[in-house]
Image (cartoon, rainbow, N blue to C red; front, side):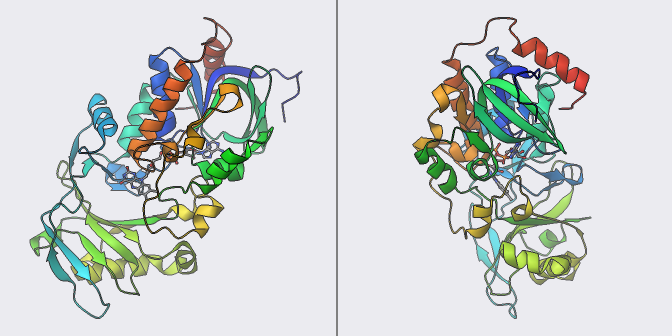
Length: 391
Ligand SMILES: Cc1cc2nc3c(=O)[nH]c(=O)nc-3n(C[C@H](O)[C@H](O)[C@H](O)COP(=O)(O)OP(=O)(O)OC[C@H]3O[C@@H](n4cnc5c(N)ncnc54)[C@H](O)[C@@H]3O)c2cc1C
């Protein structure tokens, strides 16, 4: 590990850990305020929990934002020039209460509360943010393993494959689920006990969930008088909620849904899931629904989203986020905790990731910036273009 004083380590003003929505939006805000930063991301891609497949047709992470209550998301979508459309709700929903029964249609107005979807999937949002950052800002496949507090900076130990390198930063922002920070990052000195407790107690929203989607040549269920929305409540259910995943702007058709099976059941049934999922769609919308192109993703099996604690915890409702212990700066203001779960409003949602980014940008704005031309900025860009790391 290159952490001894004889090794030349890069020095940054702000090191952001995690290229999910929070980390990318924070880097964007810091560029605007003239503060230079780099994002270190463990995955080979940006977006974190945002996962769009099939050339923009399928979202296996977040699908919706809600303009009625989410001003930051609404403004960001508009500012980036992205197109959105309303989630298809025609006032009807299917209920399937017993596996042997036929589903019954029930009236349900405004089922998704005015939810909007992005044309091309939610991945458009993070791709657009990443594209606008200066070359070399985002460093993929760099997993933070340890932070060491020094007099005037923090030392980061970053792992890429078998190699670990050291980077120095005046400030570090953890833009990742708090429980992952607690379980996977080593802090020297140890963080204060109340903060450790807050990191441990804060559930990662949707981390133990799994989602499935089917693509079809046409929305045949609409012709049969169905909206595509359904709830399944019987004990053999594979999915608990299904929704129409068509895109009226490009004409592509699909259905998507959330698993009812818990992480342990999913693991046990893993080889059989494709068959079970096709059967579940068919049980709701008829035999044609078994025949699409199937996608599914289990977030509980993703160690860069789901902590061991999240995997073990049954989630029944959206938790109350906004723990003041997470929002308080640490290590003399050099260490800040971000990620959607640290937000006071809309915690756990995309909107919360944006709120956390805004809070941290404001917290950093009150700190003295490094002298103009000091190590951070030029050094970072030169080293990045040499290293050839992507955005
Ligand atoms: C199935 C599902 C459905 C959802 N539906 C919706 C929805 O419809 N609407 C909505 O508003 N929200 C929804 N959410 C929640 C939404 O996805 C999150 O609120 C949001 O994406 C969180 O962004 P973030 O940047 O805070 O964290 P993340 O997206 O989790 O990003 C954290 C990043 O940190 C990286 N990372 C982790 N550890 C390290 C490390 N040690 N070193 C370097 N990098 C690291 C990760 O790889 C990741 O890229 C859903 C989530 C899921 C999983």
